[in-house]
Length: 333
Image (cartoon, rainbow, N blue to C red; front, top):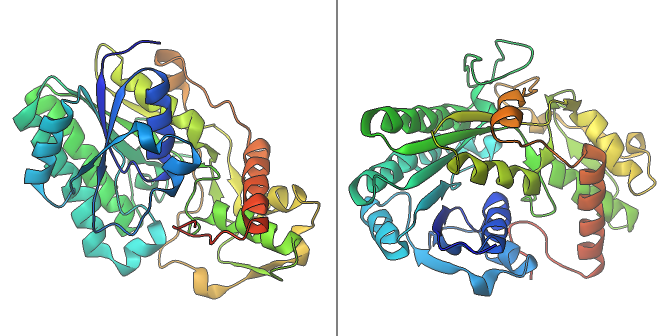
């Protein structure tokens, strides 16, 4: 497909940024990525997808408005995807001010940069199911009230409403995707699904004995990140901006996810799982399940990858990495 559009992605070195960059490159976009030099992340995801050399990296930071303005001017972006954040819920309890500064106010800075540079650009904000928190309805959709239960969820809610405010105040084509949990082999090691798949790989190869987790009764709606970036793009192609829940509509407990992942390596999770109080959070989100009906109807989008297939994909990738002696975490050698 030939496309002359230019896209700017914040958080391009993260899981979603990497998959979105590959998706846009396949559509013929010129892809520019914001990379904050203070970030501890690396370029390994872009290398793993084989797209690093095809991307234009720009030094900029959500903490610095002037750098964001320059990034928009340099990229001449017609589509801006804001995926950058301090996105690990657990860390937001330890770093609430940093989380708010980057995840909340950082989004406001980027919106302000768009207002200054190009009001005609289409803007995507990565919102999150963590905004629902203490759920007010059994199944969450675009009309469900929010009740965040972590500094991360609170910060994302500020960013979400800022996006709506700039859409209504300045006429910016600004849309938010309320993304329920989405995972992949590119997920950071600190997230529970990747922590599990990594442990399964190490245990199956005799390099680890047990897996320590906190609340395994928490339930989440897990999908594949590679599917979800298609919904992000589709939102910016619509005649009018709007907000959409992006989810599978299926909820699974952490315990059952462990069962599925260990079974991918022919193991019984009950032989290896240890409940560890150290990993409990001050306030927990017990159950999340999204209703993607609006996205299905208006964007013609639906999740294509089952949790079973996703777990198999992640376990296989981690077994390969462990066999190759890679250092796992935010960095791969």
